Amino acid sequence: MRKSLSLKRPLIVYPLAFHLLTLMVSFAILLAVAIRIDSGGPYTDEQIVPVIARAIIRQDDGHLAVRMTPELAELRETTRDLWFVSEDDAGKSVAFGSVPPHYASLIGRLSDLSYAQLRAREAPYDLAAVIRREVGPAGTLTILGHGGLNELSAIVLIASNVVILPIFLLLVLTSLVVTPWIVRRSLAGVSRIAQEAEQIDTDSRGRRLSEEHVPTEIAPLVSAVNEALRRLDEGYERQRRFIASAAHELRTPIAILSVKVEGAEHAETRRLGADVQRLATLAEQLLDLQRLDNDMKVEELDLVELVRHVVGDLAPLVIASDRTIEVQIDHSLPCRGDAAALERVVTNLVQNAIEHGGRHVTVRVVGAAFEVEDDGPGIPAEDRERVFEPFHRLRPRSSGSGLGLNLVQQVVERHGGTVSIFDAAGGGTNVRVDLTTR
Image 1 (tube, one colour):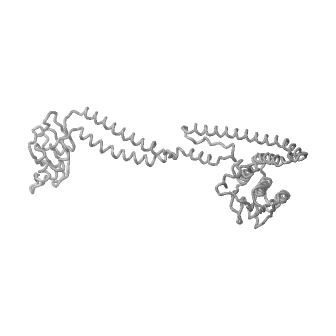
Image 2 (spheres, rainbow, N blue to C red):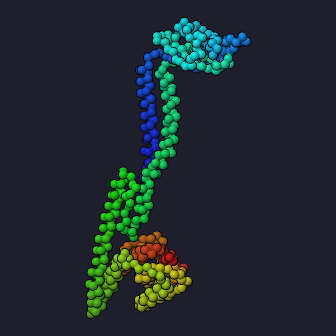
Image 3 (tube, rainbow, N blue to C red):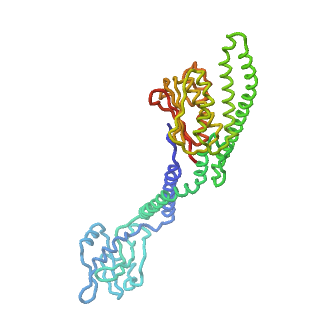
């Protein structure tokens, strides 16, 4: 069986992959544009500023001095052309390394600045410098310094990666949380029509799926299903009218044939009476199926009286078949239903028991249920569901029409009840019909 496809992949995974690709391409374009626009040379690494600030101390006389810390020593080792000027807000300053004369005019006025990136125009870019304010052991300082150089491409690349990651994580979070909510809200109409579809069966013809509150993309499917339901209803109605008409038309010639067979002079002809009766029974059962759709009259029923009435009518048939029948009343509960239809149910079950069962038939009323039990060979467990199928016969050469138990099941289901087959206590078959007490 093919596994049903989920909307999670097309609505969450695929958009996330598209978002990630879009972000990467967008930042790549921005990086390329930024590199192309920028032609000022490399930047001084700003990481030198805190190292320098921690290496500046204040002497007893208030002047600033450079203390060779391990960090500064490592920085000087990696950057041979390291130089810087550090100045406090009072104008006191200290220098380290070979400060280019270009910046001489800034010494004594660095405290007026807070941020700057100065880049040299030509190699070896020894004029590239950074200005930052930083807090260190000597207090707040303004530092002008030159150290390791970074290309703009590397800086932008690192920055873009740092930016892409949280944005993508935010997109993942919103997709996982928001997208299912949006889908559920958008497909709420689909859930509604699914519930409506579950309630459609052969007993509720004429129903259609509501097309309101359904997304535009799904509306054609709903319309197509409704059109299919309409065609099925029309086909069922044509079939029902044909069966009813055929059954009505057959009654008259069957009755005439029955009279002629019964009055025939030859014994061979009279023996056809059983076959004629079978045709008459089949026609009546077809009419019963048609009446189920049109003539159901639900009323309060006395199940005991109904069963006794049917058994009384069938008593001559039982005696003629050299069988016995009895009615047992365990206890009775009031129930509702169509008396004529339920009488047909009891009749069919008793006739089946007489024809296919043993020598004795018991009809038992138990609450809002009744059982028809015989002492015959029984029905194998594997055939107990199939015997309710139309025209199914347990024994191929059986004289039955094959519609009796199907009619029983349809009548009982229209009454909201169930029909079940069990093994009888002493062997044989026990057919139980449970009705509702509403």
